[in-house]
Length: 288
Image (cartoon, rainbow, N blue to C red):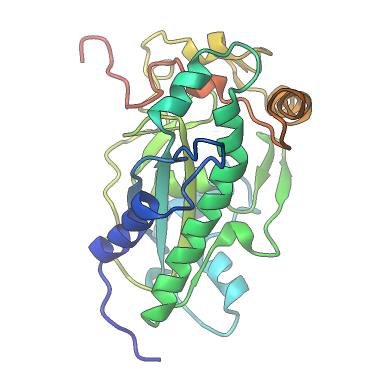
């Protein structure tokens, strides 16, 4: 199939138009409220050495874009520099964030709905991007939905995965990590993320930061303890994020609450992502 010319602007418009106009961007509640506001989009090269760095910082199991792409297209012989990682940020709506700000132990219904139905829509965003690229003649893959994707034990991080949406977004100039491990973006930390790897060479989005925690007020010396104070089970401390405690609360315990109080099968928490300085923006440093 002959390839049609494709630009970064075109891909960004494909994602933004779909999120802004799709009837499936919904929390699937009686009011049919939107799940997400307009997205952010960034790009990084498959040949960027940062993906090799992730094998040290995350674990040797973390795929490079080339490894993920080759799993989907084993005969492609694509070189790293032939590939681009397309990453997007889906911001929670103001209404959902407001609902969750008011919670102190369990997620608001809208937040729990976003965790389930919002993620279902995020998966549809990915499929839409893949289809749009394929119609133009470009091979592309969603690493998170490869059969080989899995959670891996990590001596440093307890558990990690073979492809991390947060790390792809960080590499693509979209944000840096906070104390609770959430990604702080220009639309804040109350977001969901997605990415695909495509066989197309596009200009990478500049990374406007020099540190992987640059936007976090705690790590930048601002003295912020917002996410520590918000966590109902003390899974966040000055030492970082206790994934075991967090998982137990947000997956195991919250599941029962969501089912009994909201009437559907769901889970989540997100308290550390709301009612904090980085909820909806990159927080300003004192005197900055």
